[in-house]
Image (cartoon, rainbow over all chains, first blue to last red; front, side):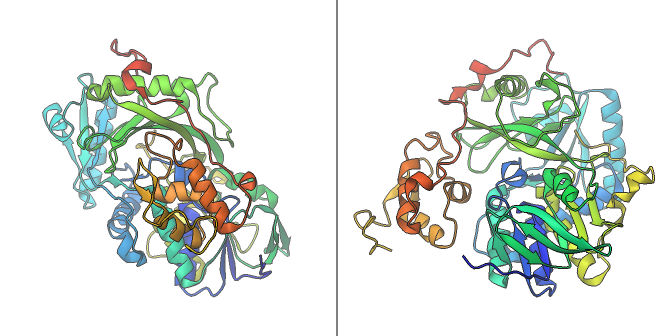
Length: 390
Length: 103
C-alpha cells in the first residue's frame, strides 16, 4: 500500500473526537489531513460507549456545549451529507436523585439550564412513571428530565463521519499505530508510526484514554488515564420497556432501550470491582461481577425487564482527567501539538469539540468557548466544577 | 462481484445474518468500500450482534472477506466472542437488591 510521507495535519485516534477533528480540519480548508488509527475507526472507546447526548449538565460551559451538541446530533446525517441511519432517538434523560442533597443539586441545575434556554424540569414520581412505565424507584427523592437528550448508534455515527471525511479527501490510515514524534525547537515536526514516518507541523492527539501515553511519546505530560467501564445488551424486545434514558449518578447506573429493541445497561466500576479507584486501565475485558451487579440493578429499577435475556456484555474506556472535564488545547511547551480529549464524553462531544479544535487551529479563535479546557489549569490549581458526572 | 469464482454460487440477495437480516449484497458493497474486517462489518451492519452472537454468520462473513480481499481466512481476525455463552435472563443472574442495598 502506498504511504504518503507528508501531511498538513495528522490526527491521532479514530474515535468520535478524532474523526470529527479530521473532518472539520479538512472542511475548514486544511489541504492534506490524515487520520491515524491503530485499529479501525470506532474500535476504541467511542464504538463501545453508551452513545448518548445530553444538555442536563450542572455547569454553564457544559450546558452551552451540550446544547450545541444536541443541535448537531439532531441534524447529523444532513450536516454530513451521508445516506446513513445513525438511529438517533430522543426520549430524554430521566435523572434519578436518591438523596436530598442530590435533589437539591438537581434543583440548581434545572434553574441554571432553564436560564440558558434548556427546558429541563423537575418531575415527581407520578410523571416519572408516565415517562417510563414500570419504573421501580420508590426510594428516589425526585427526578429531572429533558426531552431533547437522547442517544444514537456510536458505530454508525463514527462511520458517517468516516464516509463524509473520505468524500472530502481526508486520508484515513487504519492499523496505523503511532510510535513516536519528531520534535525540535519547541515544535512538533512529524509523527512516527508502525507503517512509516509523516512530516507535519500540526498533530492532534485525540487518543482518548490512551492520550496520556501518546503525549508521553512527545515528552509531554497530558493528564489522562483510562478507566474500564462495562455494559451489557439484551436481545431485542418490543419497544417501550425503557423508552427514556434512566440514569443515576449515585448509585451509578444507566439503562435505556435502543430503537432497535435491545436494552442497554451500564455502570461505573466502583461497586463491583475488587480494587479501589483510581484505576489505570488500558485493556478491555469482561467480568462476571459486572454482569451480576448490573442485572441486579435492572431487576431492581426496571423489574419488567427481568425476563429479558442478556445476549452480550463488553467493556469500553473512560478517559479520566483530574476534574473529569475535557483536556483541549495546544501544548504550551510544544507548538503544533494539540490535544483533544473529552473527559469520558467523546461520543456526544466529538462533533462539536472536533469543529472547535479545527477552528482554533485554522482561524485562531472559536465560535464556542473551549479555552478553559486547557490542561494548564491544573498547574494553576484551577479545576472545573461539574456536579453532574458519575 | 458475482464473477468472483469463490462466491458465484451465492447470490447478492442471500441473507448472511439472519438475526439482523443482512444480505450478502449489502456486505459485499461495504467490503468493497474498505470495511474489510469482521469487526468493521459487525459495527456497521450489526452482523453477529443479534441473539446468535455470530454463531450463524461469522464463518460466512469471514469467507466473504477472504474471497474479496484475497487474504486467507487464517489471517483474518474473527472478532471477539463475548459472554454470556448463551442468552441468559436478567432475573437469573442479577443479584437480589430488593433490600435496597444497590446503593
